[in-house]
Image (cartoon, rainbow, N blue to C red):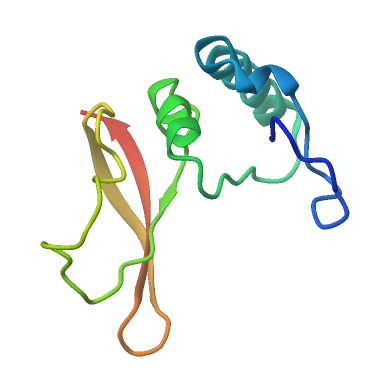
Length: 114
């Protein structure tokens, strides 16, 4: 999903929806589109980036798994806002975990509204 992808060479299967630029309408519209795609798709859907999109999809109950990459650092002085700030509370059930280079953890969780 994109509101502005002009060059789809690298994103051949990307869906462009110009109404996504309208914040509230775009969020509702996107949730409806993703719900329909999830029902129709034979392959799992993935969302990378876009914190607001991921929050909206989680709030709508459309997220089956959350995959996070954890880096072994603490950024108490230089870190930015939490990635889930403003989202509902979810319990996370660990369904898979990998160690990528001996340090970086790649857990996959199943979210359930708390």
